Length: 285
Ligand SMILES: NC(=O)c1ccc[n+]([C@@H]2O[C@H](COP(=O)([O-])OP(=O)(O)OC[C@H]3O[C@@H](n4cnc5c(N)ncnc54)[C@H](OP(=O)(O)O)[C@@H]3O)[C@@H](O)[C@H]2O)c1
Image (tube, rainbow, N blue to C red; front, top):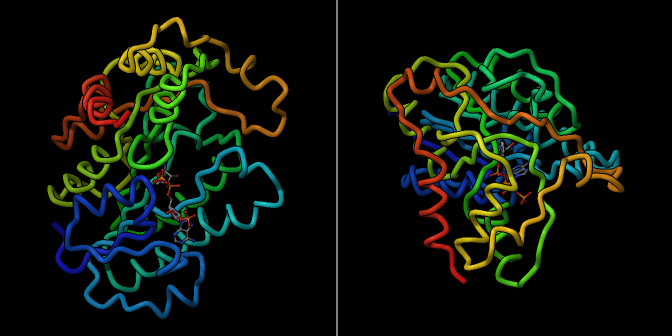
């Protein structure tokens, strides 16, 4: 583990909360304590003894990010904040851990996507994350974790589907986007592994393992677990789902990330099916 203090920025988001549990002694900062996009505030913060800077702060509302009225907020959280925190890592010699997304790719690659695939974002969110990645990877001691389909505490797809199932709603769910779930706690465990094992700095794809699946298949599994028939989920294409929603962000059809680089460090990601069953078993009705 890195010597020195650990600080989590964006500590009340899904990933931030999971990091807080896996790094119990860490200083926890969310926007109220530190707006990471505020260069002066970041400069004035006491970083004495910093060893590990974990940045889970981000603007993550993919559709809202398409609205030009939100562009400044998107860029502030996903680009300026990363540059500010990269500056802190530069000055202190701390390791920077930053999180990114498969939305930096266009999803046309056939099969699992390697870390070095050329970026080609389809959306404002994806472009902002790509620009943030550039700032994070300029830090010598960095781990950039590209993840997808995150499920943790807070609003997420699995909770939404469970709620719809419990309320007797029969949703339309896209059946042509392919990927794997990532549980926030698995992501946080991966950070512990990477910084604790002395894994090489750089970019890592981090998701759960197991067969690539679709949102519709996941929704059906959730419905079944809530005692509803799988047929209550109406399978649609992305084009059908977003017809009449011109403001929605385009999504990559392939979200499946290649995990070979991560597994080569000795980390064995859980199968998403095992992780989902465990999550559903603990989800209140
Ligand atoms: N969720 C996914 O499916 C997914 C998929 C791929 C990658 N990721 C990446 O994973 C990381 C964590 O995502 P998440 O799902 O945990 O997001 P989240 O639940 O939306 O949490 C983000 C947190 O960052 C805070 N924040 C935003 N701007 C900030 C600022 N300027 N200064 C300090 N804090 C700020 C937010 O506070 P407010 O609530 O006040 O805005 C929120 O607490 C992000 O880098 C995201 O791009 C997520």
